[in-house]
Image 1: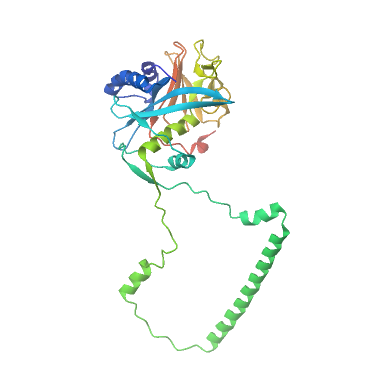
Image 2: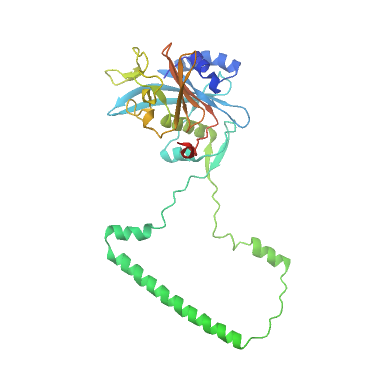
Amino acid sequence: MDNNLTLLLEALAGNGCVLPSEHRAALDISLKVKKQDAGLQTLALWGRIFTATGNDYILAEGYVSAKRIGRKLVFDTKYYYTQDGVLWLDLQPPENDDRYALCKSAKGPFTGDPATVQLVVPDPIEPSEYDEFVEPALEGDKSGSSATDEKTGSEDEEKEATTETEGEEGEDTEEAPGEPEEAKVIEDEEVAEGEGGEGEGEGEEIPAGIELPELERLCGLMKWIDEECGVVPLNSLVLTPNDVLIKNSAFTGPKFIDELDSYCHLFAGYMTAPLSKDLPGSWGIYSVPLQNDVVVRSLAWPGYFSYYSATSHDWGSVYFGFGEKNKDIAFGVP
């Protein structure tokens, strides 16, 4: 949703959400021009992704429409990026769930080059080693268990026969030791072939990975953070009689501005998903002295901040970070 860019950056400047002066001056005009050219209902600054080369991505997000279809809110979302604050270029979201999962599997910092293509190995889903034993029991099939017992018994008999044969051979060897074999000289070429030959690595396949453009990963990251964060104050948005989601012009702020119950997820079920229902310790909230502002920050996504001003009743959120999720948050939860 639209927010006041100046108030947003001033309220969150103390948390590291700052932009170069030339970019900030250009964004005031370029965002309005892009919104009009693209025919969007809303367009606002989404955040900044820090890159390894310093050529950071400045991101924006807008909506053509936001409607309720059935019991679910459907957003027609558009994503944009710029590196100079003037020229905004489109970002194409992942075309299917597999590509979206691939974006989540990508690791490492962004390069800052829009033409970069990264090789990503999808996160494997390993089946349980007990699946083959559990399934027959669940289905109530006794044939599977009996076949397994017969197979196990035959294997035990084979092992006992092999052990007896090896014992007899060992006794014969001790009673009549043979002559020592002649020493065999192994040439260097044979050693090299044995160590790095084809036979050793034939069964091992090194996954090459799947090609993932950096811009597709960038758009997937925006969608991912929106789904897990996307914080808005409760009752700040309202549905029209046509089931269109718009800003509530009569919004005067939540009742308790310093409580997590007063803020909810926009994309994970607006009005039904307050932050207090999330994993305990995954959100922090504090008030800013002398400014009458409240800041909500995510510990799962370091760099995501949302604020609400009790003076102007303005609110907004941004993400300034490297695009890395804190996967160790469970160890820091009290």
